[in-house]
Image 1: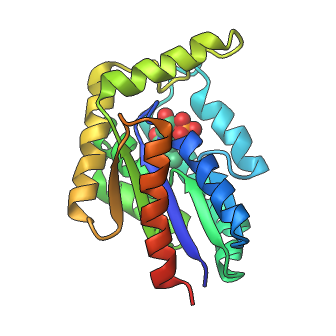
Image 2 (image 1 turned 180 degrees about the vertical axis):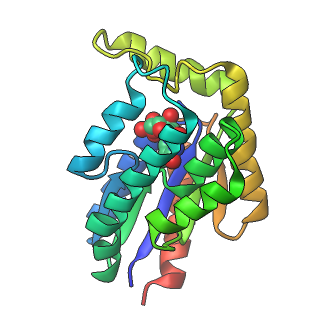
Length: 215
Ligand code: TMP
């Protein structure tokens, strides 16, 4: 069985950059791995991602949103994550079930037992072995996300980036609550630091984890 590592955090926390840097190290060390993301880790998921993030879809019901994330995950786990874990690979995933708890649970305030039930069905009970939570104040994360989009004329702020600051505060508090409840699995990294020092800290955590868990 492989190892399942997820990255989480609010918008603009720097996850994607850190996922890329980690994958370069894994590649250099010859460790068998895949990098993927939610939503959008499969070709079916890419279509679901477009529906979820499209800023024109402002009227999406929270329940429809929750079910679309579950549909994306159901496909992703069966098509990509479970097979890769069965082959003994390290799976690095940019967001997974903690995002549903933080965004749809703490952010949208959807019913907790409904969320947990859908997570169970979609993920087949597969849980991350290690989660890196990149934590920073909402103003910093959203500021970075806006700056990134404004540099690229073709990119509009997505449906989530357009949410009010209070929404992002609730999402952050959700992530911090998960980290506190599951401190063995979830390692919090200060995402106000520069890219390289974050990467060194993350590699330190992942390296120790792989040494302990890979046979
Ligand atoms: P990304 O910006 O990391 O690519 O993620 C896309 C958006 O999807 C981000 O705003 C967080 C949101 N999201 C949820 O609301 N629930 C989920 O279960 C997942 C996986 C992502």
